[in-house]
Length: 410
Image (cartoon, rainbow, N blue to C red):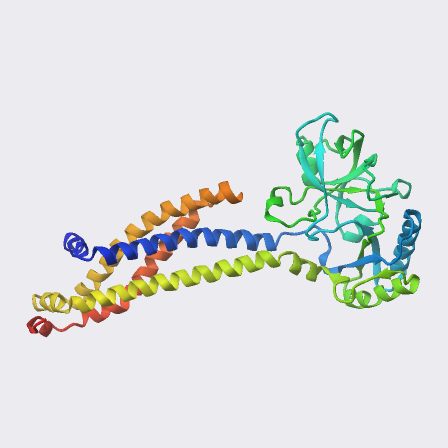
């Protein structure tokens, strides 16, 4: 089929042609970037924490009195002993934070005491010798803390413990040659801390997308935070007994000492609930972007159908003349499909440029990652197929126009 007559016909319908081409371009640009964001959010949802989520739960414990630091530390140790004695409990620990908390203690890491710029940063977890076993993380090098290395830490204490356990991601960042075990770094103070153990994976407490490059850079300090505002008790139940232990643990703590507050609704959280809450905004963003993509595609398809149907109504006599001169139904169908392909082709070329430009703008303004060109290529294919599918019904009606139409006056 010759393209020149189709191009000539489109010149007589410049407004409709330009509007549909621009609609396709904008749809491509927005849909490509939206799908990229959806993919990032969905991937973020499924990131592993490195802990035994299926058998863990957290108790948010707040103190109801103004006890001294020594009294709070003694109460915490008594609470942990109570929790570890419960039937169905494998182990328990206390910490200032846990993975997917959504906040916590973040620390700057330097290799020298007088270093001006940070080497990196890491999420800080306080934990005793039960911390690793409780969370179910895997110690791949070095050793665990000893009981004599665990010490209470007051909220405003800025001292650095002499020993620390780090994640493999942090160890590799500080010592890329793999020699981190036994080496030192500086955090919070001019006193060095020595790496005595390396765990395979432990996700940091923040879940914001900005922290993605540092997602598994975390360290464990041999400390118990004896602040008066409270603590997190992390409990590792035996398989299949999580629900039962979650029911009895708060009662056991109240029986041990009633001067505490554990919220009946949000004070005891399974890790499934913690994960659901942590990624609620990511899930909502993915759903919203999906809805936007679907609406844009429907509107674009509807626009193509409406414009083609309008053109068919305007060209009935022209189509009838072509049929009278020997054009088959298939020729008429191919004519409108080719016409749509030309419009859509111009739209996707402009849309590809807009898609890349929009992604570059988001990289600069919103710290987004670079979008792979595969998203643009897939988007182009989808928009071209959408155009062909949308034009098929009105083009088929046009192919059914009788040659008799050529004899009718307009």
